[in-house]
Length: 169
Length: 165
Image (cartoon, rainbow over all chains, first blue to last red; front, top):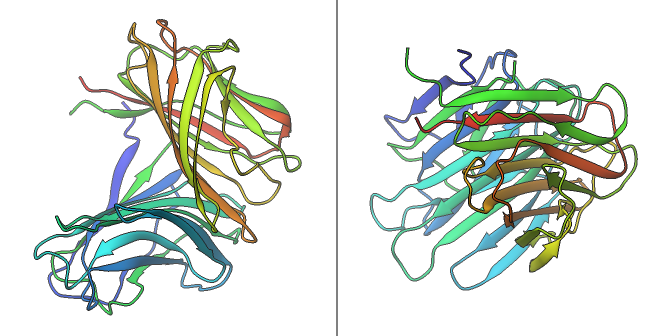
């Protein structure tokens, strides 16, 4: 029976790190999924998760939908891609955000859409979630993914990142 | 070998433009369905989804979406299809991404679905989450996406089956 959902690589941080990179991503799958549990050391309750591809910081845009438990809002940028909300240093101790990123057709010679969702819930009066539509306007196959916090500067020890490949073949 | 719980049922990639993208004869051997749809249009246009070829007033859905400036909520009842381009459209260059889960698709109760859609177009953007209901006691065996004009070549639809047993 075909195995359609395969772990490509993982990284569970044994010490804090400014970024996490998955490189040499094989072209043998159809879609990519990243699942992560993240906390950063930003001096605040929350931080944002950024992404870039193939080492490039160009041709990125995204649109977000956010909620704080009391209101919903939307915003966007044409210079970065933010794909989730994370817990940060003043968030309740030992709470990590959950993240899921979906990147379809990552080897197709067309611009790359993607989705992201990340939630910072820490049993306080305000918690934050962010749903995102990202776009990388590049026709190259994605071979490297770099994740990093907006402010951080670091992901803290215990943050975990899992990259899966989904195959439709 | 452990049981595979996430399996491709079918995939189609358009080789040329077409007004519809359809997958039929979906087997009843799974518990839930996941559709991953990455459409391009031959022009900027709307599109929708129907199940089992049903265009009766059997669909309802509620959406929470954002366009980069504000957040919106909307609902539709007794609809004849599921509008997948609320606040957005399919375009020629920047594909949308739809992740659609259809739960208990073979049960004899009404069917619920969850649609997460992502449509950033660089100069503008839209995204949202939609919960929906399809009122039928029949198993879902067919999924059809219909464009106002035509989907473009390289539009991709894949259906996965998720198995609990």
